Image (cartoon, rainbow, N blue to C red; front, side, top):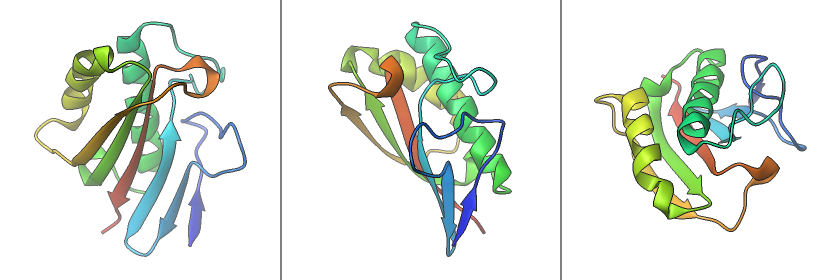
Amino acid sequence: MKMIATAKAPAAVGPYSQAVAAGDCLYLSGQIPLVPETGLLVSEKIADQAEQVLQNLAAVCAAAGGSLAKVVKCTVFLTDLANFQVVNEIYARHFGDHKPARSTIQVAALPRGAAVEIEAVMYLQ
């Protein structure tokens, strides 16, 4: 097992790692839309938040030697499913033709007032 960390994604806001490599998989902790350099929410706009979350996920994938193209599963958490379409469009742009398995769940709240969080599993081979 190996812990993965990068300054190109926000530091963990609790007692956990940005990602953990175990066997052939990298388990990425949920990313919220914090700007890595400031640790602050990127903005209140859902489009900006989704963009930042996916950039953060890509940075953690890269720190482990991979990319979003190697992600096999995502879980998307939204505080309002009315934002599904906007998040889906940005998600599709980042993943392109690659379509990992995915679940989307509405939750009551997310850390730091975020409207979206995404966790993922990446194949390391």
